[in-house]
Amino acid sequence: MAGEAYRFRLPTFSKNIITIVGGYGSGKSEIAVNLARYLKLNQSEPVVIADLDIINPYFRSREASRELANLGIKSLIPEGENFYAELPIIIPEIKTAIERGEGKLILDIGGDETGARVLSSLSDAFTPGQYELLLVLNARRPFTSDLAGCQKMLADIEAASRLKFSGLISNSHLMDETDPDTVLQGLELANKVSRKTNLPVVFISMTTDIMDKIEPRLIDLPVLALDRSLLKPWERKKVSGKNK
Amino acid sequence: MPRILMKGNEAIAEAALRAGATNYFCYPITPQTEVAEYLAHRMPEVGGVFLQAESEIAVGNILFGAASTGKRVFTSSSSPGISLMQEAISYMAGAHLPCVIVNIMRGGPGLGGILPAQSDYFQATKGGGHGDYRLLVLAPSTIQEAVDLTMQAFYLADKYRNPVMVIGDGMIGQMMEPVEFPEKYEEPPLPPKDWACTGARGREPHIIKSLFLDPLALEKNNLLLYQKYEKMKAEEVRFELYKTKTENKILIVSYGTMARICQTAIDELETESISVGLFRPITLFPYPEKELYAEAARKNIKTVLVIEMSIGQMVEDVERVVRGIKPIKFFGRTGGVVPSPEEAKEQIKELLKKEAGTRKRKTRKG
Image 1 (cartoon, rainbow over the protein chains, first blue to last red):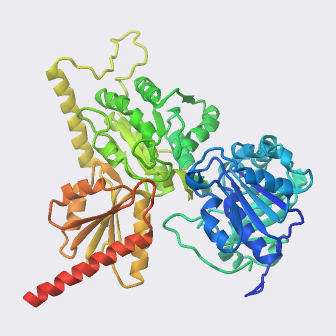
Image 2 (cartoon, each protein chain N blue to C red; image 1 turned 60 degrees about the horizontal axis):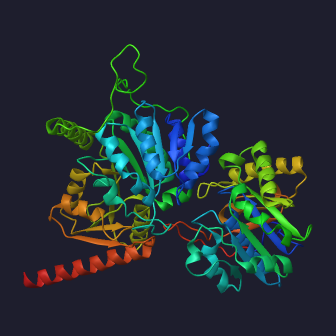
Image 3 (cartoon, helix red, strand yellow; image 1 turned 90 degrees about the vertical axis):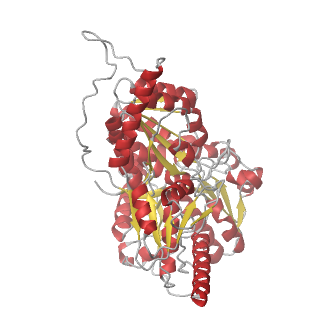
C-alpha cells in the first residue's frame, strides 16, 4: 500500500474463484472491476475477470476492459461485434478458467436470478467449497430493502445458479447521493441478513469520498474502496489512489 | 418515502402504476425490457393486467381496444418495436383515444443496434403513422424527470384524448439514479369519459372508430384533431434553460441525456472562463417555438449549436423556429455512439474561434 494509510481493514481471499452476484443495480460490476484492480495491486497471483452479464446491455464490467488491460488484468469477454450483444454468449475460456482455478478469477454475473442462471450451465466446472459466491446487497434498491427481500434474492439466485452462497457484500448506495448513513444503514441490514443466514459479510464497499467521512471504529469489517469506472457519459472519473 | 435507486425502465414502470395505469401490453426489446420485467412482478400485486402479446403489431391493436374502455393503458418498446405500432397509433389518434407509449430509443435504422440514440425524433414528432395527426411527445433527461413526465403523460393523454409518447434515449432506460415518488398521486380534475365503451345497456352504443367515408366528416374530424394540437401548443410547452447569460455567444439546443453531456461541457468550459448556455426542450411536440426564438434572438447570441445523438433531426425544428435570424450549426453522433463532453467542448471552442476571427476581420474593415 502506497500513499496515505488505509484506515480500514483490507479484504483478503483464500479462494481463487470469486463470483459476484446480486440484484440489478446492487453494484456488482463496479465491485468486480474494483476488486480486480485491488487484487492485482495487493497480491502476486495473476488476476482475470470474466464478464458473464448476459442480460444487461449497458454499464457492464467489459466497458472497463481496456483500463484493466493496462494494469495487466485479463478480461474474458466476447470479441468483435459480440462485445456489444446482450445475448447468452459464454465463451469457452471461462469454463476452462473455472476448472483450472489458477490465479484469481473474478466472475461478474448479471442481475437477479435471471442473470444468475448463466452459472447453472457452468456449475459442474466449480469444485464444491473451492469458490466464493458472494451476494451484493444494496438496501436502497426496491427489492432488497428489507430482510425478506434479501432472503428471497438469496434463495432465487441459489436455485437459479445451482451453487451455494459463501458470503455477502454490503454495498448500499444511491450513486452520487450516497452519504455515510446510506452505507451504515445498509450494513445494518446486511448484518441482519448475515445473522439469519449464517453467511458472513465478507466486506463492505463504498466510494473513497464516503470512506473519508466514516469513523473506522464504526465498521468492524474489511472495506473495499471503490473508484468508479462504469460512468455515465456526462460523469467524470475521480481518482483517489486508495487501495493501492 | 426515502429516495431509492432505480433503473430508468423500472422507474417509468412504477410511475405508470402510480398514475393509475394498470393495463400494460408489451413485447420485449432491448434496451427497455426491464419495464416489462418490473411490471410482470408488480402488476399481480396491484391487480392489474400484464399481457405480453405475440408482436408489437398486436400490442398496438390491443391498446386501441383497451383504451376504448376508458381505462388507462400503456406500452413501452424501443425503436423497431415502435415502428411496428405506427398503424395502431395513427388509428388511436384518429379515434381520439388516450394512450401512453414509451419509446426507449436505440440506434437505427432497421434492427440497428442496442446502444442509445435519439434518431426517432422525426418518427415521434412528424408522424410515423399516416394522416393528419400528432403525438404529444415528452423527453426526460433524468430518471426523476422520467418519473414525473410518465405520470403527467397519462393525465395529458386523458386531457386531450390523444396518444402521448414519453421518449428517452437508451441511457434513460438503462442508467440508475436515485428517485422519489410522491406520497400521494394528484392531478387536476378531468372530464368524465362519457365516450368510453363500458356496456350499452340503457343507452345508445358508443362507437369508436377512425373510419369516415364522407370526406366532409373526415375533414371535420381532422379539424377537431387540429384544434387539440393548437391547444397543446398554447398550454403544454415545456423547456429548461441552463446558464443562459447575457455574455454568452453560443446557445446550445439539446434534449434528453444529450443535454446532460452538454451541461458537463458547459460547466467545464466555465472553469476556462468560457460561458455557454443551453436550451433544453422537454416537449418535442409541441415544440417550444416562441421560447427558443426569444433565446436565439438575443443580441449576444451569435450562433445556435444543436447537438443530438442522431445525424440531424431536431435541428430541422430549430431551423424552422429560428428562421434564419442566427446561423445554426449541428453536431451529432449516430448509431449508438454517444457524443462526449470533450467533443461538445471542441465544437464550442471551434465556433468561438471562428466567431472571434469574423469579428477581427469586421473591425479591420470598419
